[in-house]
Amino acid sequence: MKTKVWLNLDPQKVDVSYLYKKFDEIGCDFEAEAIPDNNPELLIKKVKDVDIVIATMEPWNETTLGAVKGKVKFIQKYGTGVDSVDLKAAGKNGIPVANIPGANAPAVAEVAMMHILNLGRRFTNCVGGCREGIWPSTITGNELDGKIVGLAGYGRVAKNLARMISGFSVKLLAYDPFVKEAVPGQNITFVDTLEELFERSDIVSLHMPFMPSTARIINKSLFECMKPHAYLVNTCRGGVIDEADLIEALKTGKLAGAGLDVLTEEPPKADQPLMHMDNVYITSHMGAASLESEYRSQVIIADNIKEFLEGKLPKSVRNKEFLV
Image (cartoon, rainbow, N blue to C red; front, side, top):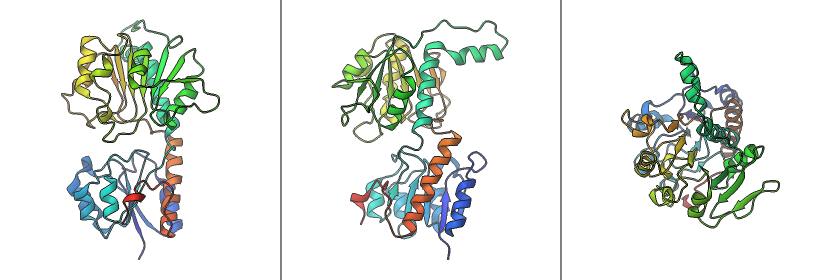
């Protein structure tokens, strides 16, 4: 009987032809179908006859993992973040969980770069105004040259953003509790605390994983450190920001604006205040959505699953210490 692999994505929205081809070569049955609203009940029903899951943002917690114990043998995340999976619970249920670190880093960094430029020049306001027949629709903004850009976290995405932004006349600061030196060729000054980073920067870009220690770590205490003309950009996970504190900082003018590719709740409710603020620009978690990123991701996914089926544990398994 063939191994059945399921991907929680709509193949009409994402080209997964590479995966169909590779899994056919490996000898697996592969299906791509999205679970509406990542509903847990529908998820459990869907995976009752699935051996390997390629997960997106559906909830893999004690309940859903317990329901598939003994059936699902491997979970491969379609992305870097594993915050939608309870790694410890997966391990207790004997399910390795792998991710694809680095595959989407350039694409996410580009979106951070776009938000940085848009916050300064309000490009999207002009585009929207022109489409509505308003001419001119120009908003006099700020150049990026001469600014101090702070990187909160210095992982793969931040390194790519630093590379991209180096063509501008900017000063780069970084804070990372685990990294204290820049890669060769990147002129970055490391600071000792997040407070110092927020205090000195004109633009802060967030690049940290979401975990208990970083939940709502970006909050009022940091916003109070910022320059009144400063901008915040987030392309990592919405949960690292205390959104109530962010809304207050934006309303009171303590923070000039924000560019957000991620929110705590996705999709947001219609009454989410951030969706209706003139100084906030939101994109729909589009960071990794490039053709190149999709291809790199799918190559790693197929390789990881092939390796697992050969009896090996892929290097990117993130819950090795919990496996039983």
